[in-house]
Length: 210
Image (tube, rainbow, N blue to C red; front, side, top):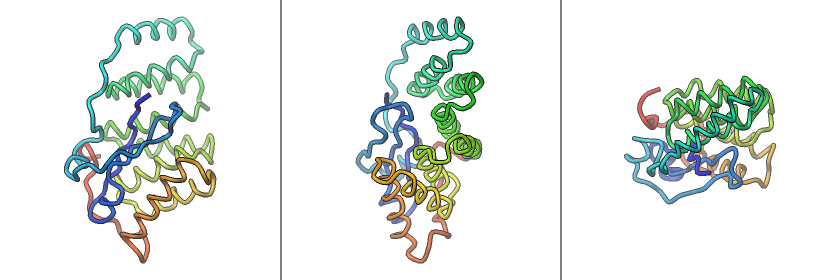
């Protein structure tokens, strides 16, 4: 699954170190990829850097039939959310992730994917609130913590909050792919702000204002 969840970019030296980060799917086997640097203007203007694959309406229709026949089936609803997310149809992805959580409120991956879909819908505050719900389910969920740090740094310019989230990733999941990315984020913060991460650089959230 493609699920390019969050493109990471900020201004100045920090931007130069971290531009182009993409956090992978909560559902995918590969947690994250690190594509080559993109131009700053491109990274700041839109969260997605490539066209979505053609959307399979027939597959979505079949999944909807399955979901309608099985009111207690959270996983089919998550699959629908993933399909719409990959097609960059974020409002519909939100609808299906929310439906999955109504069936299984403890589905931490669906909760975090919902937060990411909020972010891609230019709702960073809702994204962060949803990540908090994910962490209430699993305080050590490293993918949530990693995404929380990215949204705090990029969308909210809260570098101290990002630093805290990424340090938690290192604490709870050392040696993981998420920890490797969090380590790079912390190194970028400290290179940009040797005295601390409390003063954010000026940066514009991707895809418009919050």
